[in-house]
Each structure stands twice: as structure tokens, then as C-alpha cells.
Amino acid sequence: MLVFTCAYPAHVNAKPLGMLDAEGLPKSLADLIEHVSPAVVNIKVVTGGYAANRPGEDATEGQGSGFIVTSDGKIVTNFHVIEGGDKITVGFADGKEFPAKIIGTDHETDIAVIQIQSQQSFDYVGFYHGPDVRIGDWVLAIGNPFGIGQSSSVGIISATLRKRVDSGSYVDYMQTDATVNRGNSGGPLFNFKGEVIGVNSAIFSPTGASVGIAFAVPHTLAEEIVADLIQFGKVKRGFLGASLREAEYTQNDIVFKGGATINSVGANSPADKSGLKVDDIIFAINNTKIKNAVEATRVIGRLRAGEIAVFHIERNDKVIEGGIRVTIGARPENKDTLKIATGNTSGVANPSVTAPPAPKANSLYNTGLSLVDLGATFRESIGMRVDQVGVYVEAVALGSNAARKGIKSGMVILEADNKPVASVRFFGEIVRKAQASGQRTLVVKVRTLNGSEHYTSISLN
Image (cartoon, rainbow, N blue to C red):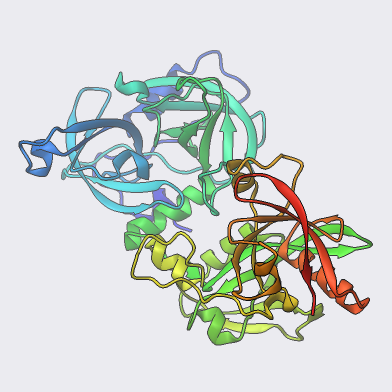
């Protein structure tokens, strides 16, 4: 990990900030704010119009915040602050302004680095290095709310390891009650020693203004991302070439979770070439235990292209001795390319991409069904009750018994053999048990495309 107060040579007359000592809660934060605020900037982004050499087009203007991390003027901010901008201007509390250009961006974590276009030296701040930040720690947020100019607010760390619906697989946010509004995005969250412990990135608000719930990218992740963006212009994440879902298994009819199940494998991907298969359960990568699909994605992402990693897996209820060695690839940046490379083409915008082949009549234990696990967000979006689980019918084999019984793509299987279907794996276990006991049909409860629910049966022959 790069330490920014050491990784770059100090420029003449530039001083590193963030070295104050704080014992307990001071009577005033004026000295701290005065100390760090020269490294906090306002960011103005203009899109269209003269900024894009399109005089007849209306220009739009956005505002955000950022903070300087090197004496030559590299600034950390949010990707969404500068995304699509044709002209970026950096402003200081003393009124000075400078043009800036983009050095690197990472939409997965919403972090970006921009460079001030000037030869002068700048005051800068560093990321915190020390014990884990704790709930209840005091914090100071400085930024440019609503574009009105530099403002400061105080609060505490309200929670850690927060997840947001649109945060992807790489960020567990810190939550703070420091007042953060629109325009604070990209600004620093300091501890009372003047060290950056987070990058303010989002708020939760039904009104659009602060209600005391703000989210910041933790310093540990932010510093890693910034180091890659400065060095490479992007984040070089490892790539397996498989889509993953939460792994589940049953014991005495109780569903347990653990590991990550391979949901699909991209043709000629690292997973495909190594021999990994659909429904393999990854329970460790090298020496790191895997609790769920998100954790697996993060571990894979920290690997580098060309690196060999050992995937410890369970296949058909048996652990493969010694694991499977996988030569990691480079993660595609384009979302559609990424989905195709993992064998998942559902929802791909590119019309030239062909859909996955239809399932055969004997697929998934002779049911003729291709099923996908449902996430909580999707269940909510289609109006399922919060207490319901189910698996999504991705495709149905033409001529299969399931097709003849009216099961169609887009439906949801809620129950099988009077048991709630929590996952594709659990459905498969129900089918296998039924077949082993000699059952010829399986009663299932389905949710139709219009939201109604009814029972039908499918053949197990």
C-alpha cells in the first residue's frame, strides 16, 4: 500500500498536514480546521456548451468536493462528481482557482483522482494508518455543500460495514451523523488528528438534505484505490470469469449459508480453462476463507492478472483434494463485456450478443428448467412479499413437461414439495430427494408474470 506522505518527493515550501495530536475532545476545532482546510477543495464541473466546444448546446454545471493528497496537486474526489465533465475547475477557500484534468477513475468504488494544472506546490493531507476506526469515534467533515463554499461539520462514526443497494461488491461504507449534503461528495472525513479516515460519498435522505445519515468510503479501501489510479489510471482487478451467488446447503431441512456458488462460467474464461463448473461451491481462495459471493468477488479482485490462485471447492457434496489452480485474468471494464465474460448475458444491452442457449429437456435433473437465485432487491422490485423466497425461471426447454404445464421464463418458483425454495441449489436437492424416493412428479407453487400464485406439477422422469 502506498503511503502518500512518503511515496512522492516533497516540493519546496510544501508541508504535509495531518500531524496534530488530540487528547480527548478539544474545546474548539478551529485550530484543526485551520490546519487541514488548505488541502480541501471545491470542484466545479461543466458539461456541454463552450466547455465541450459546442457553443449552441446548453451547458450544465455540477459541484463537489475533494482533498489534495500529494504536494504536486493530486486530488481525491468521487467519480460521480467529475463523470462526463468537459471542464473541471478546482477552487480553494481563499478564492484561488485552477484547471484540473482526470488522472484515473473507478466507478466500482466511486473514487477518482484529478490533477491540478499548475507547477506550484500545495498543502496536502494523508490517510489514517492505525487501529480500526470504531463506532463512536469523533469525525470532522469538510466540503462544499450545495456549492455555497467550504463548510465544516462534526459528528461521530454511527456504524461501519454498511452496504448500499448501488454500491457494488467492493465497498462496505462507514456511516456518520456529521452533516453532509449534496456537494459534499468527494470531500474528506477527518479524525481529530487531521488524518483522512473516509471519503464522503453519499447520503440517505427522503428530502435531499441531510438527515444525519451519510456514507463514506473507508480510508483503507480508498487509499488502495487511489494508489492504483495514480499509478495506472485505473484499478487493476483480478477476474475469474464466473458469476457467483450465495452458497446454501441444507441439513435436517434447515438452510445454512456459506461460501460462493458458481452460477455461470464464461467461455474460455480463467474459470473455464481451469475446469471450474457451474454449482461448484468456493469455500476458500488460497488461504482466505470465503463466507459469501461478495467476499469472493473482493478476494478475486485483489489478485492480479497472471497470478495463480488455488480455489478450494466442493463439487457434488465432495471436496476436491488440493483445490483447483486458476490463472487469474484481467477484469473487463465494460459492463456488458463483463457479463458476457462470466457467461451471464441476461440484460446485456449489446444487440449483437446472442442469448444463452435454451436449456435442454433433461436440464436440471430432467425438469427442463434454467433457474437463477433471486436477490432481495429484485424480489422487492417485482412486488414479492418480504417473507417470501423463490428462484427465478430464466428459461424453459421447449417441449419439456414444465413448458407444457405453463411454466414460462420470468416466473418465480416459490415452493417445491411444500417447502419454500430459498435457492437453486435447494431446489435441486428437493428434486434429487424426490427422485431417489421414487416420486414421478413434483408439486410446485409458482408466481406468474402478473403476480398471481398457483400450484402445478412437473414431471421428474
